[in-house]
Amino acid sequence: MKISPSLPLWSIASPILGWLVYAVNALQPGSWFIALLVAGLMASVLAAVYHAEVVAHKVGEPFGTLVLALAVTLIEVALIVSLMLAGGEATTGLARDTVFAAIMIILNGIVGICLLMGASQHREQSFGQHGVSASLATLAAIAVLTLVLPNYTLTTAGPFYSSSQLAFIAVISLVLYGTFVLVQTVRHRDYFLPPNAAGDAEAHAEPPSNKVAIAAAVLLLACLGAVVLLAKALAPTLEVGLDNLGAPKSVVGIIIAAIVLLPEGLAAVRAARANRLQTSLNLAIGSALASIGLTIPAVAVVSLATGWTLSLGLDIKSTVLLMLSFIVAGFSLSTGRTTVMQGMVHLVIFAVYLFTTIVP
Image (cartoon, rainbow, N blue to C red):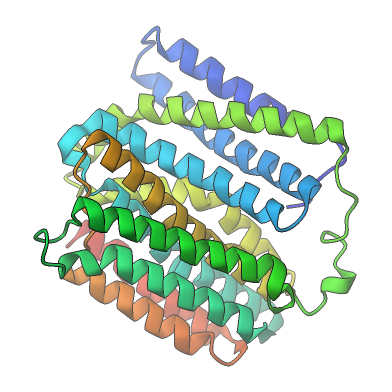
């Protein structure tokens, strides 16, 4: 996303719209107002990520990457916690469903679209293998430790971790993600740079002024607050709608993940169409790592502090799809070159995931 020297009007108006819509909702205007709540939520999410990128561009690396990752993760955690507070015991698996959905959306949906659209336009695209291999290895390790291992531990019958196990896995997730950030932004930054990084105008654009950066930081907090409140306001309607449709509870996780990942997904697709596949993969896999590497520890802390039960283990069907996704990603991204074939395979797996979620 290109950062302008001043904040665009839409990014300023979005959090104002979000807070205004939430305030009017307290008056219970009627069911027609749901559309405005959704619009306010989407606008606030997009504006939050934009302001995070402004702040990130100002502070530079490695702190810039952390600012954006933390902003997105705060949105995700806020949505999860809001719905868990509203749903009680019925939402014990919401964090698992959301994180799993984020991985499947990114690893198969976003990556698949990027590979397919990029190769359709440029026939064949290349990227650096070292950075992508490190990203996939880290993501696979955290995903299996948090979403698969709970089914096979003995202290507490799965799909749950005991309190000590949950605390340990939360620390391990933070260690792995922190090490990845260090490698990506400091020790081996060149592994994650696109081949034409030296001539990339966006990468070397003039950073925003202190005034713009401070305004973006304040608006970022306003956007995050609007997201939390609007998500909480929409939670009852979302649950009633899914119940009326007979959809599984895990669909809520897909909706949350899709909302959170929309800005990064759009940016990744734009980069792929511009023949910057390395940037696309950095955005996509980096978002997945932030989602699971930071969300699980945050939700674990909330669980341990409040005594909530946190169900993390995936069922057999989801485990098979998760393993298949990592195996296919390992093969399709192992040569440093991609065509439409790899993109189509990932999209087919994503379609199977969506279909079997609705029709298990």
